[in-house]
Length: 120
Picture 1: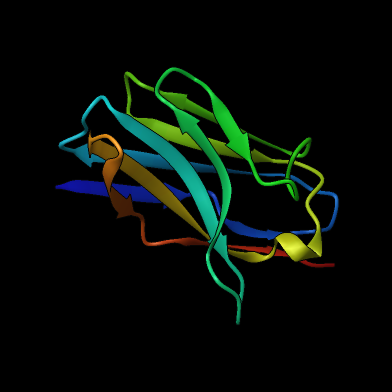
Picture 2 (picture 1 turned 180 degrees about the vertical axis):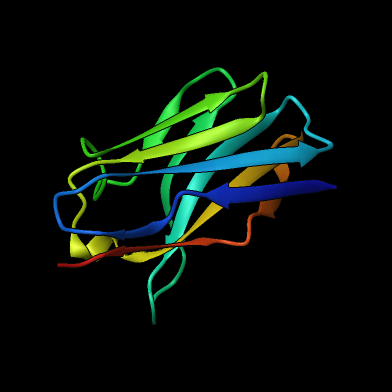
């Protein structure tokens, strides 16, 4: 079993920055992709950014150039640096680990979510 604990959410003014962190514990296997998703009220959960174990990244178009995802394989952590935040970035942000136990089959693990509110 995998447990994910997020931290770093909060209230920030438009144009400000926040850094989200997620620590994974439990049975972490090497073939995994770590990432962040978000869900705004009344909307579906959407991908924000992912990062593979080797470092390759993928970003939603809406956050490219503003958000940066990084991971530490020795500590099993994944961070999301969010700059130039906009009100439309307001959402609950969820940490995710996708374990490819037999590619392309996978299992998803989720954190409990952390609220990010961008407002003046």
